Length: 254
Image (cartoon, rainbow, N blue to C red; front, side, top):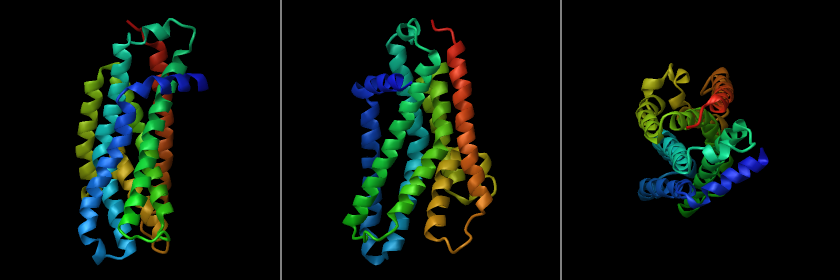
């Protein structure tokens, strides 16, 4: 499996996928800085970090995650279609499950590294705005990690849509996700029902994680809701992985 993952990683080096994963956090951090800089002198360090976290979560998991995850999976599927639609790989004695599983792992790594890069840029931006190093940047990192975990089910669904149909379907799926994530995940419309809508999980889960870690003395969210969403995201990711890998294994390549 490791060899399949390495092979998949090498395939992407000359595609747009690494550039998108690298440049997207830079663009969004520029937007966060434009928002935070004019008022940074009027706010305390805690408030400034929370405002930056709010903006980053809304932009990253409310806008970029639904569209970007669809775009990355669509590009990945389009790359395979342009390279012979898996024919050259499927005729070899390599397990189809390993081929598809490696693609899922590499895309998860790229999105994870992109989210890590966003955190690094957030910390650098905070330093530029005068936020002390003592501020809970670890809570920001944990919150973004939680949001990334909650986004994996939709990443894997997007990949299946791109492979089963075409890249445009995956991007369209992501575009719809922007509306749902923005309305349900970032507004009061989702209060009480967001746990049943996976598009809202990343942005809501990011907020929950950050506020729970930085304001632990307050009962902001029911603990059961937090763990239910986390377990649901992990179980759903595993279920989608198993179903899509079996689908790819049984798929007839033409």
